[in-house]
Length: 378
Image (tube, rainbow, N blue to C red; front, side, top):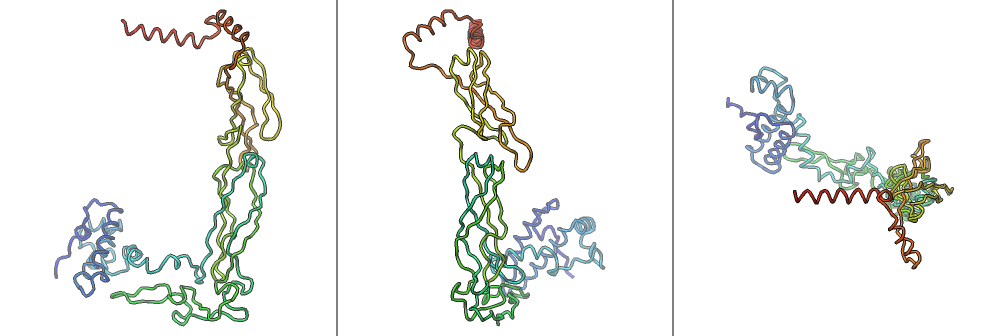
């Protein structure tokens, strides 16, 4: 009896190969020696069996451990359940889909157990204002979609008639075909997996069981909804073919940029320009929040450009929670423009009377910069 080849050599991997490497090597070898790719080649068929046997052993941690220790002797006389070498192992099931997956077709994978094809999911893009995201709303949308035909109740057959059992597959939706030394099952080409055929189609839907129509739907948009949120309306998608299950409708929301407010989660930010005199002497201003109320903001004397003021609870509501974010007001000190002669004179006089204490940041900066420059001359 000839000596069996080493399982690792059969797959073309090192002994320390991980599961991913084993699987990749198995797929490569199985595709190479598959009988359908090597018709009338007994050597290729035998090699294909050996590849499957090797992978079936090495993919199982317990079998692999026993093989690494005892070699092929671990499976002799019934040890570890035997090496088998047939097609019962999981390895063949993995490669089967790669070789024959295209024969099944995407449509076959979408069918339910009854052979009825599920309707497609639909997407609807909706843009709302930030104010609407703040308060929430109920929106009416119009969606063109396929709905069940009312004349034939979705069967696709002329009213008063019924679909008939497919003569090719006898209503099973699948037929068996010989592939080399084994058989495979595939979608019935005559009924496309439905198990039924229509000899007298419905004139309204042309045998499809569905017609195209625009529907009006009500969509509830909760307060606090964020940009990019997806809302699913189950069963509001496209009707299935010939009475198949209905798909879903997905609403993709986008929030339009606001003129005054920028959003970050549940917080809002607003930049407010103030005059140089207000920043220097102090003052106040009013801002209108998203709920339509006005809030007064006090500016302390000597406020610098970019200073932020927090208005607690004036931000966005948190989705489905009893929480509200904050509103942050950032002041932008505006430099005076288009000065009159008198205004210029007053500013020049102010500059002459100013001291380091009036502008501590600029005075400190230039003092440090001078020290930095002097360090190069040392």
